[in-house]
Length: 327
Image (cartoon, rainbow, N blue to C red):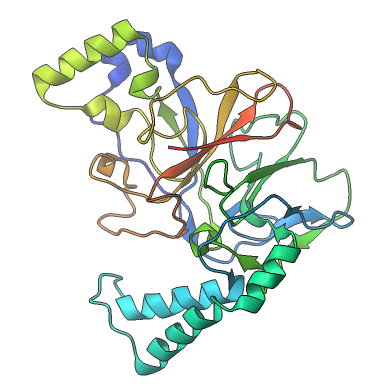
């Protein structure tokens, strides 16, 4: 089923023509719980992986909340879904069996033997997104690659306290490929860093820069207009919320926006926004027409205290490490 962003209540580029050349196309992914296959674009699904390439790991120092296996994370989410009820609004009500099992899972996840294993073994990366250029218009480097894969390490890293992101740019015709996923007994340090498997339904939309990145004169005139009308519609309409590729990236909420650069000095460009939440009071105008009043957090990740993780890529060399900023 397609998902359709409602018509914009205001055409901001007609009010301020200087915005027109700043427009970019973002691709909303609209993830929904499902069983994506290896040859589909997906969030948290199986990856189309080279047969002779080992599954990647992270050997950096890690910090963690609890040590849970992927199977345990999935089981805990099923327990919580039943406890919240069919519409997900509660009140929270555990069956006796589910309550006992939840307590046992919590006890298992603090077992000291797991800590010993964790300290002696590299951490397996988790699949975050698989995006084919045929599905995502304007995906970078489509003249050289037909597939982008995004993975991350499911632990905090002391330098930034967020998952460490890894990219794989692939040409699927180059070598034999097969389905790949980390083992179900893979340990993760934060259950909130485990994305549910989701299908995606890409939808291109037009975006404009974050208000804090506008030219000062233009930002001043927009702000003056919003004060007069008591309507901050530019901030509501400029950037699509949720999981998306390309465009202008996420709205900067935690820190002031700045010019993001790759370690090589080249300008870094928005690649993927991994969203902790889908909707807030300022983003209701983006709810797809097909959703109506339904509110669904299909992916179930949480970055920080509910932030987004905006992933940027080097504008000149795909081999360079991505830049990830909690916004």
